Length: 140
Ligand code: ADP
Ligand code: MG
Image (cartoon, rainbow, N blue to C red; front, side, top):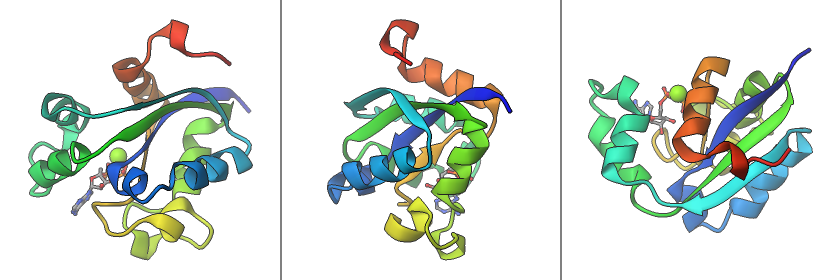
């Protein structure tokens, strides 16, 4: 198994409900290590770039508005198969479909306000980490 890095975000619906610690604990309990972390805010430009693959989808503007509506926590996670493992502990995009014990099952409020983001591939993980962190901010 390979040690990988992935990018994680705690979304505004979760920071608003004071769930940063609860979600961070679920990440750490999975064995993944948080090797970089920062509280920040999205801008419309950054949200549109970050979610560029969804720019033609009907929910795109609402998603960008939501992502800019409050603070977010951006994190780099490291561990064995980190990309897949993080997607597993997040649960399905729609919390109604998410498995018991996942972050989205426990904390998400809707399909849009689903509390966390996680990279869907190793390639996207590298791109998304670069969006938010320089190498000297990452401390394994
Ligand atoms: P994931 O975050 O699980 O990788 P996607 O990449 O498909 O999911 O979508 C990105 C984000 O856009 C989702 O996490 C969710 O916040 C939002 N989203 C996805 N599909 C919809 C939808 N049909 N309606 C509203 N928001 C959506
Ligand atoms: Mg996605």
